[in-house]
Image (tube, rainbow, N blue to C red; front, side, top):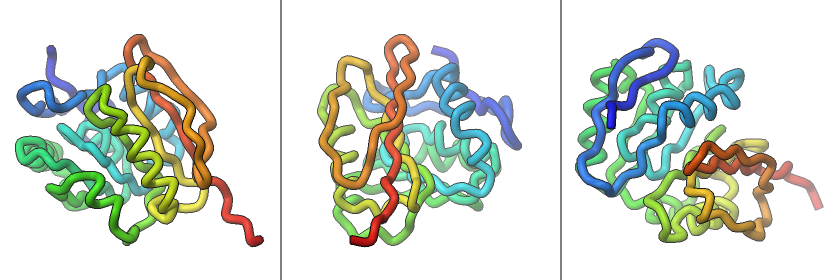
Length: 190
């Protein structure tokens, strides 16, 4: 497998280090490029929570393209080390926060920041994506109003989920990768 790279922005062309072993699910460059083609107009100045950050590739791409702040969460110490090394390589660490923590431990806390985007790409086939999405749905303050939660899974993992505060609005499939987009519903005064 060739190393992942930063596709665009200030760190364009930089090769990123990857986490050894199969505990992380790296995003293919083609999928990452497609994702950022969708997000691109809104990335400059945006904030992102990269929940199962792995190598940090998605959050680093966002920073390279002008995101204001990215919080990287991963419980794997090897992943945290690689994210920090990749932030050093790309010189993007000043706008990043890297936390060695289980995503569900974070999501159990009261949200202390509302993000424009929450990116969810957990290890495969363990229903983790849906559990994480339900946690965000239960505490929608993790997202700004009209903020997005974006899930990256294998298409066979997908199922519809009953949500109160989030709404699925798009899917994009790239061979064995499915991106599912959810938007925080507008807050209505009842």
